Image (cartoon, rainbow, N blue to C red; front, side):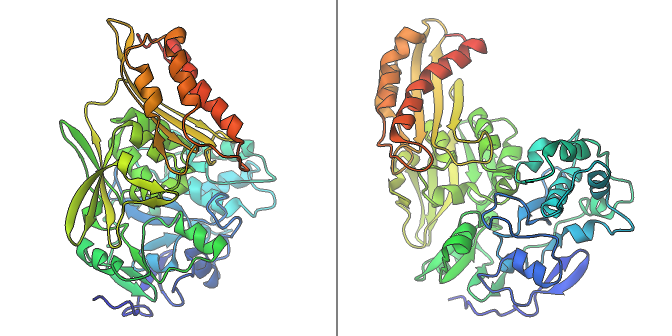
Length: 471
């Protein structure tokens, strides 16, 4: 059995702003934010402690997709300090100095992008991650979606972002992207372990109180706001066995430890329904940490990915010391935040069968358009027969209307064979409005949720008509 004692704790180092720092005092529940502030790097701050405001954003060097290494913005308030062992971090202090501002800092200053300054270092780090993104053409405004400013207003911040050109030829952070990322090495730090292999991880997860951790975007919130203290955190986010992505003739397999940003970029439009989900899933810094396996592992009834994966007829490959087994996603959830996962078992891969449905859509109803939790989520995957103008096949995934994500099977059955027009879909729309067991809560009433379900099919019909989808 692998010891959970910090065999290399005090000797472990982190490269922070170009200098090696001993990883001292990093046992859970110490976060990366608290550890960095303990070094005197107080630009990053705690605002919400749940990854919604971005005041804590820093840059970490991660394996790249379009370059060997990419600077990635993450929420330091959620990340365990222990996970930084052997890694490279840049904070706002490491980007520039008062006498030699970084280009991002300069544009923020001259364009009035900062007033009280509380949020500014986090904005600067998120902007810098986009500034150094390989192959950048313009500035992706979604890079700022996880940063909140209460006093400046976003116009001068956006002006600063859009004024940024390409990094200078001698920019050391740009040059860093051209060489290999820092290696991910096994490490112990108190109640946190980064195992060397999947087999080691599974052995540890069989111990009482052990919990798998990847991006920590859910567990970090539980620790910060609810005082959760698992007995042992087993980091699985860098295990090669969980980070593959393959596209075959009949299936797409997605490694459970890939972050949502990595899945989005590596799929590159090959699953349009997921492309509709990603921009509405939290924010860029959260998607930079959150994994597809973690989103399924939490079993939340309001997660955005499960409805889409249900509509795609996805299967999960689960792995344990006894081997692998395949479970349809429709059979995975067993109750509120409960699943068929046994002790010591992990989601290893998500399998999406091919070919895909020809008409897909994702409807998320929330109080804000972006960076919000769904009141209702509806995912559609339909095949429309162009010759007869009827629905040949229908799959509808729902979130936020039951104790688990569900398939709207009764409404699906009512759609098959009917004309794709307002009169034809009306019975199925009524059945969809009655799906699930929605509750009244602080996000929406049960009546509102049913009303939104009832409008989902007519809304899809109107969208397909506007886009010229033939029925």
